[in-house]
Image (cartoon, rainbow, N blue to C red):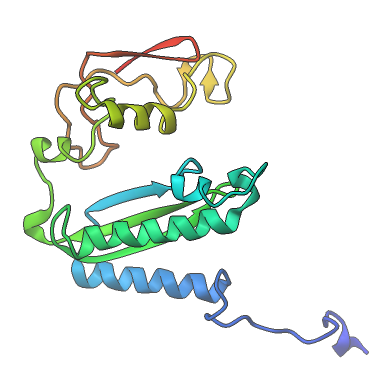
Length: 215
């Protein structure tokens, strides 16, 4: 019969919003986030936290011949506990000021390591709006190799990509399409309608993959 053409065999099921990752679930979470923005104002800080397979809490749980990638369950559990601690430090302990509201999402890299994107809405008197205040929170510089030795080791071993050079996907005939390396900037520039220009002063030199990187 003509009226039966185009019908799909079986029964059509619409996943409810309680099904995590479904269309309705994602839409509901988005609407919840927009409701918070409408009530408390626009976000103040965007923070990313990534799991580190070298964490001792992960390595201590591995048996012989295992590597962290063999146990995504351990990685996820340790990451969630550390994320909860970070959220508590930010919201209850007010490490970066008074937090009026926050949202976060957890994603996974292709190799199975989770990371979280956190958005904080700060109280008006806690929002950093001067270059000097922002420089204490974020800058495009490596820590001092002797005065901040532990922090320097963490940054150089976990937060650096390979040097940008000809032949990579980001390379065009005009150079790096993302504009690296960035120019030196003594103080952070606050831009209303552009990407931020973080403080990057001349100073130390770090070698990565045989290339000298100037901080």
